[in-house]
Image 1 (cartoon, rainbow, N blue to C red):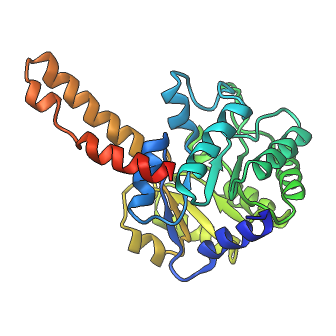
Image 2: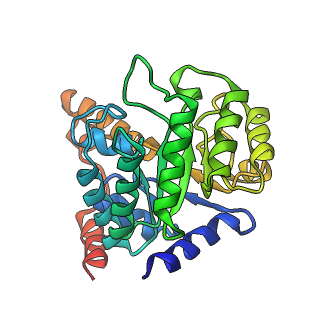
Length: 274
């Protein structure tokens, strides 16, 4: 599918009434399960991907090539539009960000997220002008072939500044970002303020505001167009593994080995192969 057609298909999910839920997969089987459940698009999770490789997220520990290979796998197995959670765009300069977007287009991704993070724990959020220039470079490289999500991580990096968050998101929209995203605003009022300030650009929310997990219907009523889950499904699966290992330590083989049958896994894998 040519990039422009894929762009239109993926963007249409963001502009229709109600929007959509876009869960994040972390490997081939999880992607196939999500596709089998009927989701219309999926995303990578930089945090989940890093964890599967035994690395920390957000510190430039994953390479552009590794993430692209991962995203291609999810798309190849499912045939669904895939949105890449590509951290800060994998590079120090706006030109590096543009190269990442070009590579994502060439890899068949439907969307790409670019954050204003730096990978530097001492100064985790980039200066405003730097962040905007990098977003402009991403949009210029996209050329209507891939949906660009402009993201600010103020709230999850200890900068609870709603005004600056809105300023950044508005600037991202002004340079052409298709979707806007600020993970974990403090409450529903802050989320509504973001949606109103950047309208009509679609807004993604990570699960819910920080203070309370809402329903999909409640988020849609607030004007959210896309709901992603980040590493939440992955951590949910890891919680089940932790419970199983605790049962095994206690000598309970039954509780430790209860799960879906491998015939179900084989069925899903066969669908991906075909």
